[in-house]
Length: 121
Figure (spheres, rainbow, N blue to C red):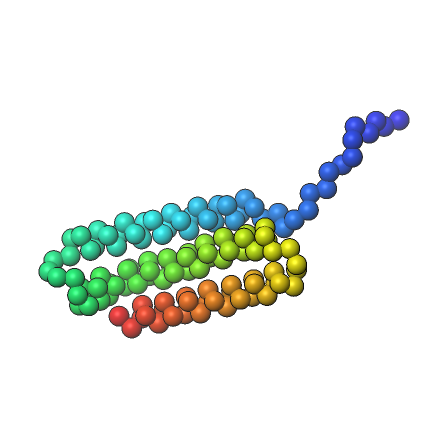
């Protein structure tokens, strides 16, 4: 005879909390690294800070790559954060879906604009 020590708890949800938590930390670390690199370049730049100096900072291929990676990281970081807000505070599924789609379209548009600015330098 088996003994039942209570009901079995069924946990529902997407189950991606740890992955999202880790991605938030990784993307935040990448953004912090980029900030330090950019500040170092600005501090050690000679002459007045004009368009030529800024274009020079972002002209190097490694800086373009790092900036590209940071734009992707910002987009991912923002999506995870905003998605969590929508899931926590917007209960009607239809409205939440519309907000998710709007968030994705907005972030992709912002990233596209950032890439356009980056490659024009």
